[in-house]
Length: 381
Image (cartoon, rainbow, N blue to C red; front, side, top):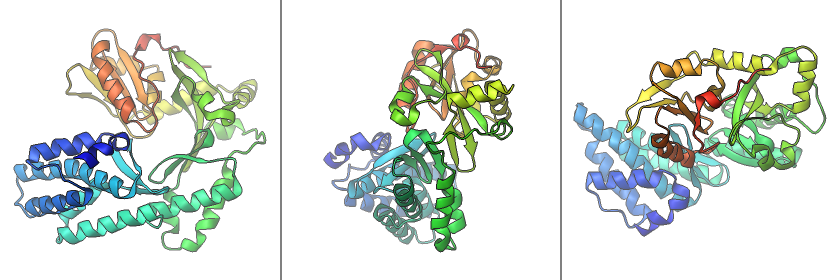
């Protein structure tokens, strides 16, 4: 158990999930990460070939959730790294560039004709990710190397599988490059150079409004966000909303995005454009299928968790009060703990622990603040 507790600073929610499953399944805490893998092999063998039934399905789900968390911890103990989460998705980062999904590994083993062999294959894949040769690590490592060569002023600051965040909040999704170069690795370097060539440099480039209008979207960030970016944050547009929440604007491209500069915004406005209004229009169009769901909790609670990176920004939508009123009565309170979650309730004190929990789990945390929805100013030009 001591090795598990030692992982708590990097384990995120994995530790609580794993220990809860161990207790519920009647297992003693393994003495080492190798013992944890042996325990998982036995647990998978026990349930893998059960007849289809509601009880068997529940056992499978519990094993995927709790056993996957335990496998993630075993890999962190073996390779080092840390847990990262994005909404309901969880990964372990292995090595400088690798990423691995331990829950998918357990699920695949349960579905395989030879569960032990499948789990062994998945563990070898995790080793490759930690060594920088796995399918995710290969792409991210190559990108990082080209970044250091061509744009040494930028650093890889954060990542989630193929999604990387650079200095200044530049976000790039390398998944498409991974697909395009899977069968022809020789073109990888050229593909990465093309992506790097599109990143904004130090020079001022006045993007025409006609192009920006099809890419602009709002983003909600925490107070001090630009200061944390350092020199890369200088000159970016930011508008205070309420308390420690602020609004920014982003231009989204395929696989990457960048924040809008204040001088760009002023240039478009001088030309007669309404950038903030247009950003809200595009957000509203993308919100037609947004997932606002009333969930079973100790308080009346609605969660927006769409997974498109825009849920926190949806607190800017003018019709949000009407949407929430369909599920909640009385004064409405909202919180944006991270970019992929918007929480709403009519019980502000009861909402606090839910916000704190979501904030603590977030790779892109924004704010622990809870605020009246009515206090959010209009975000229009």
